[in-house]
Image 1 (cartoon, rainbow, N blue to C red):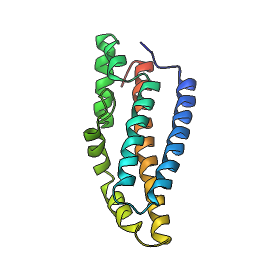
Image 2 (image 1 turned 90 degrees about the horizontal axis):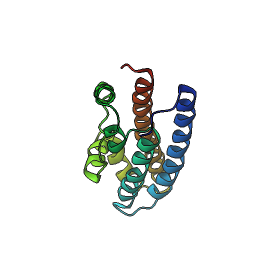
Image 3 (image 1 turned 45 degrees about the vertical axis):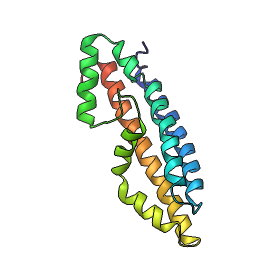
Image 4 (image 1 turned 30 degrees about the vertical axis):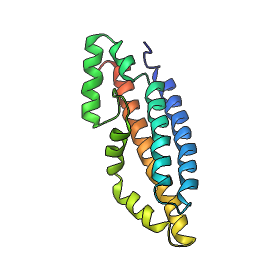
Length: 157
């Protein structure tokens, strides 16, 4: 089982994961300018299906990794996850679960769908909204993972 790294390493891990999110968000933004219905949402789901588990794995918080912890550590993890309000830590990530999470940024996605049909400015707005939504979801997940890994390292919530 991967025990989360000491705090300086957790800080470096958080920075690496943020860079990974920004790269994926840039790809999401580039697809958002294509005025074909559904392509951007399908791309976002695909990117998130890869990104979220990769972040979770790096922090040592996949369901399998958590199951390998002693029971008191498992209880600590799930207590911090509950406080953080994370829907993604310690769970198998499915498209349905990601759609639930995407609904939290639903207004941005709806505006993005409409905006990209307006020439140039609308496409730029759609790309910006797509980038922003991906960064928001990715960074929120990173912060939840960081908080849980830090609590696990320190032994309290």
